[in-house]
Image (cartoon, rainbow over all chains, first blue to last red; front, side, top):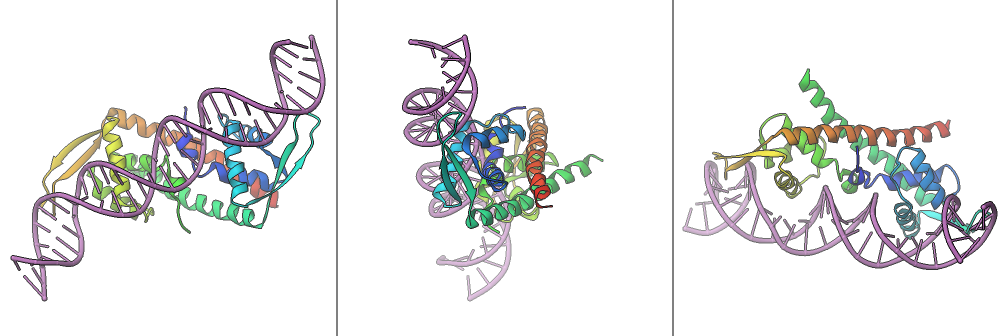
Length: 112
Length: 112
DNA sequence: ACCACTACCTCGTTATACTATATACTAGTA
DNA sequence: TACTAGTATATAGTATAACGAGGTAGTGGT
């Protein structure tokens, strides 16, 4: 199975928000966490476009810290607006995914 | 709650395929069915871009029939390729939605 | 010097949903 | 007749988001 690209639109940002909400983290680490969570094809460029967008929309607070493993890291934490955005995201997901699953359920019903 | 636009990318086409798979139907009717299924904001233009794409990708067979209610209708049925595409879609959906729900589940776990 | 890993950034591409608008057929009504 | 509403299809243009490809930098090992 390949190419979930279009299906991830609108949800990947929510997942990044969720990861940040669990505790201070930075772009490179977020990418790795997404991969561990099953989104194996997500690349760094994608995550950075998302974190940049979160910055632009003022959903995160930023703190730059030095690292002994390489260049300085840019740590993100959710602010109040980000927290609210995340809750809205999960409500949206719940709504949309339940609708899709209804469509799917009717399909199964038809097969019986 | 508003604007599921981005979240519907990649899934709306699958839903249209599913609707067609249940039996011969046409664009205008598909729009109404999607609305009944909960996608209340889906408009005709959106559905036509999808059905046009399905045509272009040879996933549907087409038959034009006159109507007593207005202009002729363009009826769609899934062909073999369309059927296969639909099955792939549901597998993708199952995969992606389960991953997202895992992310969400861990969020709940954290709150406990 | 070179490579690998960590870490960030950005430009351009692609896919898709949506907006707005146009066309056309039927039927009712003022 | 002219209009309105409902049915029905189509399309040009826009917005958004993920992704591909490439660049820059710091640290450490060979």
